[in-house]
Amino acid sequence: MEKINEISTLMFKDFPDCVGVSDLQKMLGIKRTKSYELLKSGTIKSIKIGKDYKISKFNIIAYLLGGEQI
Image: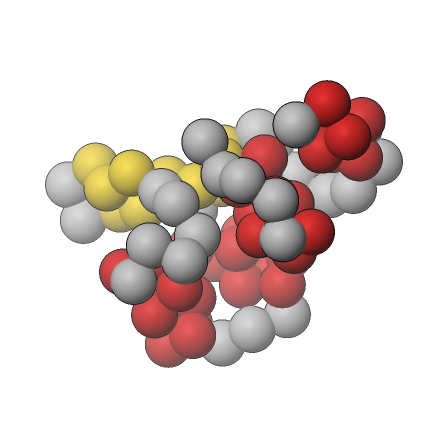
């Protein structure tokens, strides 16, 4: 987890700590359908507020590195 914290200062530094689906698409270079598939399946952990998903930048980096998400 400490490694992911260190990497988060470099990786996606132009994005806020909590992002929405459109930012997730930009960060991973994927389409909207794939973004929702990853979120709905729980592959990338998120919370849903109303109709919107909120995703921790930490969880996106952990997903990419194969680490544990919070």
